Length: 282
Ligand SMILES: Nc1ncnc2c1ncn2[C@@H]1O[C@H](COP(=O)(O)OP(=O)(O)OP(=O)(O)O)[C@@H](O)[C@H]1O
Image (cartoon, rainbow, N blue to C red; front, top):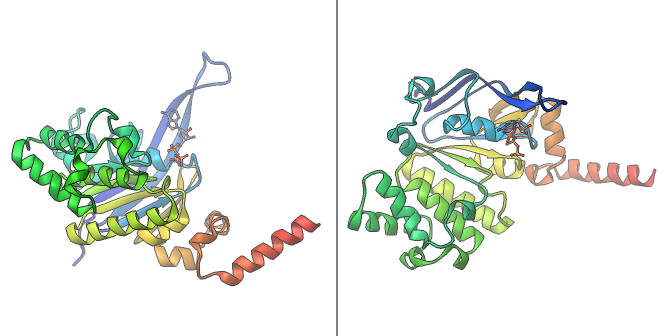
């Protein structure tokens, strides 16, 4: 039996209207060009690529924050294009996001618990129920009830990212778009947050679209990976297959530039260092 994908992105195309060389002349820039991938329930799909390759734009289309020029995004069988223009509350509940900079989406003058209770209030959960849910979700992400009454300035980057994850998860979403969600954290906090995301996935069956430029991160977090280059997926497949035997030159160059992504390739790294030394000496 095969499970129906939770998310189906099919031949997605996104154009932006930008200023031309002469500012009065507009031109069209296609930043996502025929991107197709699926995410199964409980699966993590990593979307990797260099800066500007169209990763965030693809994620924004899934969140209904970017206008789709062509192709389709289907969630649980429903084409997002068929939804009302104003995104229905049920979709906003089912599909959440976690971004790179949690502080940017938290009001510095509000205690962080309020971010959770306000999110719940938008979905009709108030009062004692909301308070209890907030305590529970903070516990799930490794924070305590005491943290609910802190201000953002009184928390570390890792703790703030836990707040952002708590806010995303408190509504029991089916999919979370993690856009560079661990990129700003130091290595040990990164691995704590990655482990947390994996534990939460195991417990709840949530799916992740994991957007990152960091291949080392994607290797640890994703079941499958798509490699995006200038708006096109040049290669996709199981994480192990992509990392062990990359087929596309672009993937190989990304891997070579990210030794952390390739812990097994000690020999390869040594050879690369020797090449660099030889090149510097020449
Ligand atoms: N609103 C917009 N209007 C015009 N161009 C845009 C807009 N948003 C993004 N772009 C362009 O689209 C391309 C893809 O951007 P996107 O943010 O999706 O890339 P990315 O792979 O996520 O990069 P990064 O890792 O740097 O965030 C870039 O060339 C960017 O300049």
